[in-house]
Length: 74
Ligand code: FES
Image (cartoon, rainbow, N blue to C red; front, side, top):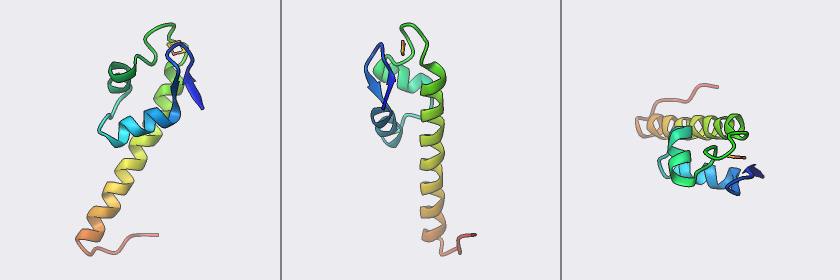
């Protein structure tokens, strides 16, 4: 799905950047220019970044708990 029309940036590109270490809309903007032209996509970029960051944190948490042999909740 195209998120930033001005720069042609997709949600997949944003998610990949987060997996590679980006953790904010600023990081994504620096890497891609998303949100830096008309600004109309900023809220959508933020939503994709926030969801991807949260997903990465959950993966990290699950991996850490597995590494420590702590049972996962739920
Ligand atoms: S749509 Fe992203 S800067 Fe214009």
